[in-house]
Image (tube, rainbow, N blue to C red; front, side, top):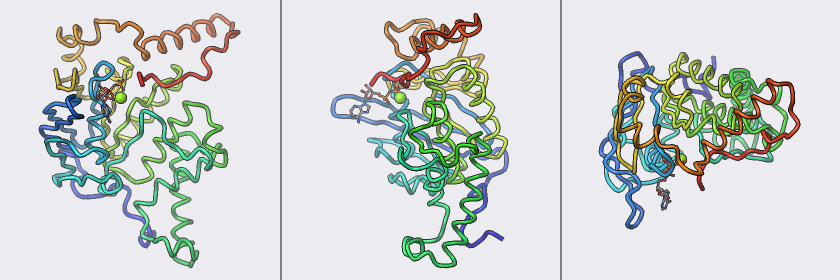
Length: 308
Ligand SMILES: Nc1ncnc2c1ncn2[C@@H]1O[C@H](COP(=O)(O)OP(=O)(O)OP(=O)(O)O)[C@@H](O)[C@H]1O
Ligand SMILES: [Mg+2]
């Protein structure tokens, strides 16, 4: 049995279908005179993949920061499985909500496996002293944690890289490692902030499969993406943020055909919009490769699709 050090894979009650996992009500975030998020309501139900889209600067990441305790919202409440979440990110993780970051946050000089083990700390009971003294309880917990971490590396396709330093991974692999690390806390809800930014089409497809597999394992997903194909393929429901406010919410079909969305976002190519230029670059590289040439190498060293 593994009961001394870990909690079950799906924490908390109401893991079955139908329950509301996340309920954000009237979330507002002001920075001085700027209202980055204004009165946003959003729910995610058990078993759902929900998309959050909107132009650059719409407030998507700020909203995530409000959900995950990084910011204390100026107004509004965030509940996870019916309980108000604390305004402390490690407590939010402990409650069952994990996330990845738009700007990748890995321990660059730790190995892949160690990064995932760090993500497990909220699910182990062994404390600091036990870890430092390396007593029998710690060693058992460590073995179990490592087994689980390896399962997650297999799940995300990174098992062969377990001993590589995170900083030596390709960009798409770093994004996957962020997901593996987030999953290590055994979340009931996973928030992904632009998981495919900077990925090539093959990596994006693999990430779609990964997100579907995460849902099959019983973790609901809320995902921010600029890649509309990804969003409309994957999501049960999509919410559109524009200038901090929720403009539209509905099925992919409803959102795609809403004129306001088309006007505010989809139909208005943003000049110099980083996500778009990056996507164009990836498409061009893909076309070159399909044509049998790959001379420029411009697909490498790409940065994430973000404005800041
Ligand atoms: N800590 C902060 N202090 C002040 N302003 C902030 C802060 N964080 C975000 N903002 C502002 O809030 C607005 C929303 O930013 P946010 O990063 O949430 O947008 P986003 O929708 O995630 O955009 P992108 O698609 O480019 O990632 C922007 O105008 C941004 O400059
Ligand atoms: Mg963002």
